[in-house]
Image (tube, rainbow, N blue to C red; front, side):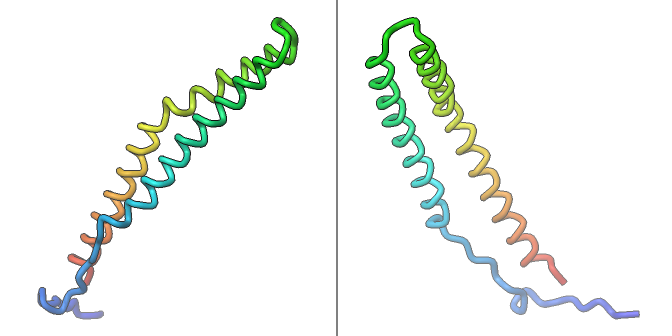
Length: 100
């Protein structure tokens, strides 16, 4: 049977984190929001070029309504990503702190 070794605090690896790790997530959400805004603008221009109450017009309106729901979810997406990062930091820290 193996004997458990207790490491001194000085010998334990130190977990290192930096707030810069969240920068990529922030830029991704920003680009997503800008892309959706411009995409909706283009879709509205396409809709305006069509005759009202035709199948094409109605399909474009439905598409715009569907895509317009995505920006409503950006805060939820950001919260989930932030929670995942925080959980990752905590798990890494605790693993480095208490791993034997």
